[in-house]
Image 1 (tube, rainbow, N blue to C red):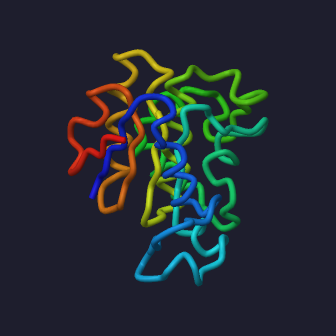
Image 2: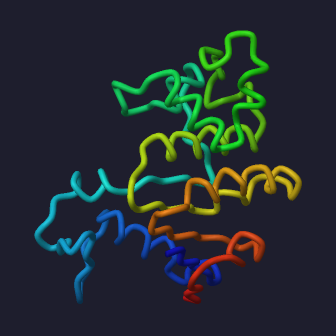
Image 3: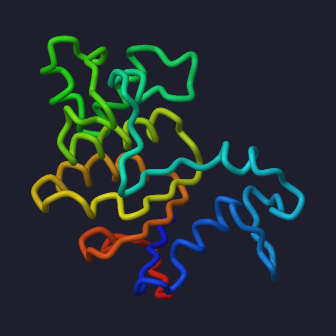
Length: 181
């Protein structure tokens, strides 16, 4: 199911996401993931089940391959390329002379905003977590690029529990539920 979280600044969207990530402990009630209570579950188990795509691109000064496979020691080139294809990123990555081994510069300076987003989406696809959090994942790109990125996000969201924080109607329109905070 895809749940959109909308509301004005300060309404609690980020606080709710931080509770889901167990960055905060709930003061009342209980949160469960896979029928496990957060009260009895450690932080690492929870975070091992959640993939994140943020507005601010978390890319490292290394190669496309290392950024997509970050945290996965045994990822193969074919798995990385498949994730890039699903994220609509392979078209631009394949044009680099070094392909997946192309350096992207400090925080991805050699890539456009939409390319950075698609690299992040490819990372989340490769990690294949059951829960996905998209926090303003398309807010820093133009409408034309959003269409390309949305194709990758649709592939990423398929078969997952997804929480989407967004201000654009186009991003939340196809959600199964919209929570207004």
